[in-house]
Amino acid sequence: MAIKMKRHSTIIMAFGAVSFLIFLAFSKFSESGAFNQQLPDNENLVQTPKKKIILMWTTVFGLQSGTLDDCPLKNQCEFTYDKSLLHSANAIVFHASDAYQVQHFPSPTSPNQKFVFLSMETPENLQAQGVFGKFQKNFFHWTMTHVSSSNVHFPYGGYWVPHQIAKERGFPLLDLSYDPIKLFEGKEIKGIFWLVSNCVTPDRREKAIEDLSKYIRVDIAGKCAQNETMKNYCPRGSNCHDIYRKYYFIFVAENSICNDYITEKYWDRFMLPVIPIVMRKRIYERKIPPKSYIAMDEFSNPKAMADYLNFLMNNKNAYLEYFKWRNEGWTKAPWNTEGYRIGNLCCYSLHKVLGYCNLCDHLLRPDAEKPVPTIPDIGEWYIEQSACEKDDFVKQWTGA
Image 1 (tube, rainbow, N blue to C red):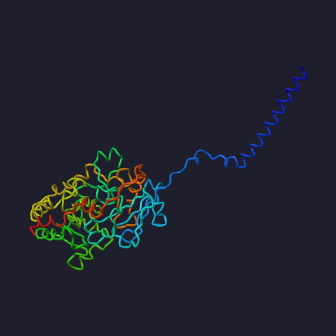
Image 2: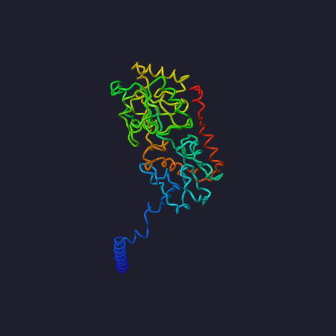
Image 3: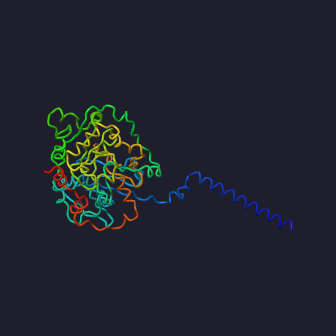
């Protein structure tokens, strides 16, 4: 019995010694980092999804503009002008007005690639430049324009939202004064101010304003002014807000009357204490707050409109009605929030164009990996969707 006990004790001691040696060896191995190198943690085992690559094949108005700065999705997309990345690019973007510079148009390198038609101008302007003839039929998969029916909506400025939606989404309110004293502060000139550099336009807005000026004061500055003083009155690149404040109205009509086409002419000036004048109500009524602007087609002719504008300038309470929307909770949706990611946020600094965040958003959607049919004729599509009116309205309104 004593011998058995002694053997059992010896075995236990031997096992303990071996266990201790194994523990020491394991400790040394762990301290050296070798164990960690052999067995990666779970985080390292999860593969990071590849970034979606947005490849610009052209410049934008001659500049390598565009960025994903401040885009909440910027870590999931890469924005580049490096054509050597064609084979790995998810979207290849062609800015229509810069198509003249392209010597070689690529072909898709995979069925999932999207060739994207980008335009910040109306089809009328592109037709005048001969742009559509540069592109082959069935070349593009996606569109990226101001037209809301585009695959990737690329509007100027942003989106107005009413108080209820702003409250539900937690959007900050804009600091726009409805104080009558501030709104009338500095008003010296009873009339309309128009800063313009494009003197002959498809919609003939110049004819509309010419006839309106027969019945109300209209001061024209910029390239289309009648004298050198007014041509240099508001230099290009200046915001000229102090000048605008002197007037009761500003003319912000576009050079073309097309669906959804509202540019910096409105978006850079909506915060000013003046009432914007536009041409066609249908373009604006679903885009910007009601009774925050006056449309020419609300009146039968230039004289009828001038009579109403003169009435407003002589009746403060009636004039202030066009600023009540500021007190009703309307605000602009933050540009980089889901559902409201926009296009051309900053029109005069094209290197800061932020619309590619919306393109990144679309590329990250599950269905973006699927092949899609090409657009048979990009010119026909853009002309049809824009539904530009040419000068039909002005002919009817002025009788000329």
